[in-house]
Image (tube, rainbow, N blue to C red; front, side, top):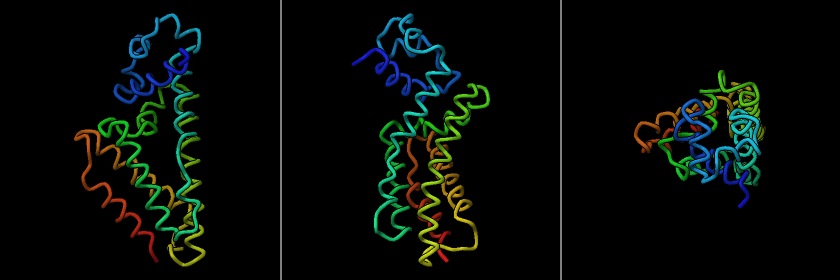
Length: 186
């Protein structure tokens, strides 16, 4: 594994556990088992590394459940549940990487903020398309625009991830997703 990949892989974990401001370059290089000087061979700054991690995380988001022939609410449920599982696999007590960086984005640098914003926008856009399809078939309410409903679902998800942090799990998370999806019914 290349030094850059080791730094990226381990930095993601360090940022999850400590947040942007709590994580130092030394923490990252120690976790990766690389000399501190090697960090600067691959990244100009901690901000550049964080921006790349956000981009990489967003690119790895699986939207395939949203692009099937199943009913829209079922697709949304499958996708959102998969996102719960994704966060659980990386340590629910650390929450969603996007949420962690969103909380630090005002001071983590412009590139990090832009990448978090782009990732959340892309996620909302994918959900919005599925909602539009559900609205067209009468499965989902048209009382609100699809984009507003997509933002609502993301806010529910990020809230679930935030509430999970203190306990390391959130037993009612799946039920809360169900409640949010029920709110989309006509």
